[in-house]
Length: 191
Image (cartoon, rainbow, N blue to C red; front, side):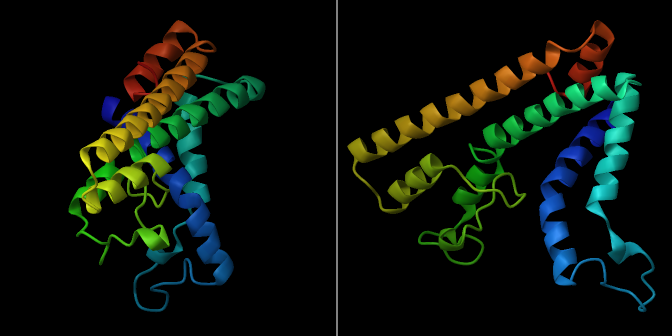
């Protein structure tokens, strides 16, 4: 049960991150058509919005919410926590930070910062300006003073993102009953 709930939360987060690119592909006529007529069945017809809706329904059931008005408030706060988590983890030292370590100096394949391809958390989001400035200072082999200044700004931005996440989690907890808070804790939504 625990892993099902956590996987559901991860899937909702991933579906939310994938929703915009999936819609853009569908509008361009390039999404959902791969593999048709080639024996691949429905595999190419992935609909991120349907997946997001199913995950939302499962989450609503997990929280035991039957009232639509209550769910609207609760789900908005869940989304706020997920967004704050993506900002805190994705653009601030999560996979975005790891990508900076794996990228060859000066850009190159998989590390083209000019095109904005260094996604936060691997979901195509943007890294923070502070992280970009720190990466540029490292690549330029900046002086100790410049590196210290860039590190200070990066740490401050990271702390602000972590504070935003903690605030979103507290706001979510404020609307939960004890049973729901226990469910949210198991899902990793609150601390």
